[in-house]
Image 1 (cartoon, rainbow, N blue to C red):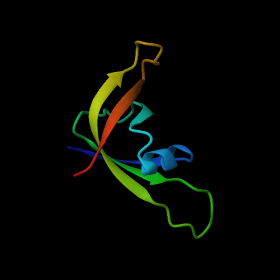
Image 2: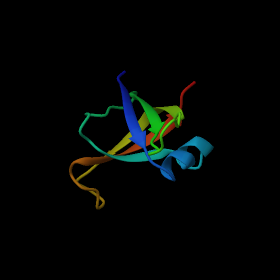
Image 3: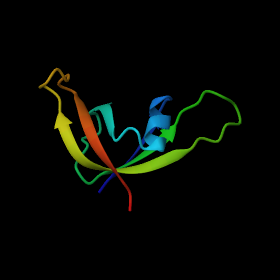
Image 4: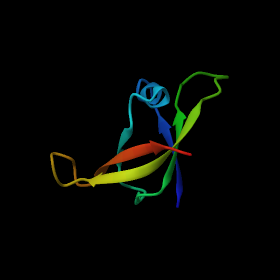
Length: 82
């Protein structure tokens, strides 16, 4: 298992935080694999702001090149870390 630390802007981070969103669309420049862990860090351009983060495990990968997804992108299905 590899841990990937990724910046995430709002409103997308907030949707992950609240549980509304359980997937990520990302450029596949890290060779994501099922079982990898994502540390999704809230990205805010403000001084003295301490960002929140959430841990999610990759449970499913839909690779690009199909269904209108660009070749070098993936959709990552996520689950909570237990």
